[in-house]
Amino acid sequence: MGRPAIRIATAGDERELAVIDHATWSPQVAPVPLWPLETPFFNDQTSPGNVLVAQEAERILGYVKLRPSPMPASDGHVQEINGFAVAPQHQGRGIGHLLLDAALQLAIERDARRITLRVLGSNTRAQAIYLAHGYRVEGRLVGQFLIHDHYVDDVLMARELRSENEEWSR
Ligand SMILES: CC(C)(COP(=O)(O)OP(=O)(O)OC[C@H]1O[C@@H](n2cnc3c(N)ncnc32)[C@H](O)[C@@H]1OP(=O)(O)O)[C@@H](O)C(=O)NCCC(=O)NCCS
Image (cartoon, rainbow, N blue to C red; front, side):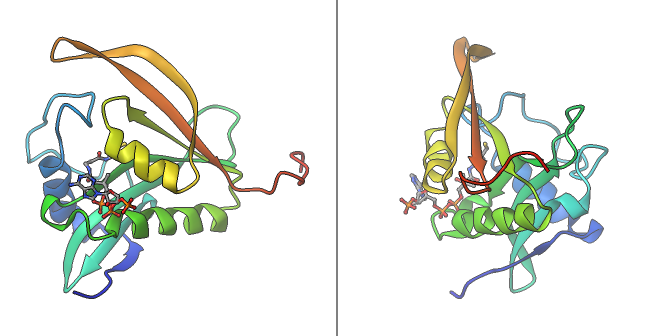
């Protein structure tokens, strides 16, 4: 199989993205109970312009969400990955790597200085791919979630985009 194309999502991708989101839920990777399949993928928190999709032969295989940090006093210099999934039958093909490369390029185009994300302590596979892409653990909210009777950490990771020598002030 060839290399999937990466593009910005459109509203018409709604159903395929909702199916992937639903299919990749598990208590190891998500701090929320499984939602109904009919739940819209796009909403106030997630607009198509903040989603990159991997597409092959007219099918969407995976996505990564990248949005400006919604925290006050952030003007887009911090972008956050707030969703990342590849359809189970296409995992292990390098699509996750392609999506993270594309998210990095999009963050650079947005003139970001940092990309942040949060990942469950139990999601060791996602942590490994983030580490491979230069994300570092910056913090850990210990026992933040109680999932199936186990306390699970919320791991805060980030990647710097500017060189160490560059001034931080504008
Ligand atoms: C995390 C995720 C997006 C990675 O997508 P992917 O397309 O499978 O990733 P890749 O194929 O690019 O592989 C990434 C790494 O995982 C490894 N991997 C792939 N399939 C694996 C499997 N079944 N078990 C363990 N490792 C596996 C790959 O070997 C690769 O490691 P490498 O770079 O050392 O070779 C995907 O596993 C997923 O959708 N998980 C569920 C949702 C999730 O956890 N999202 C992140 C929330 S923070």
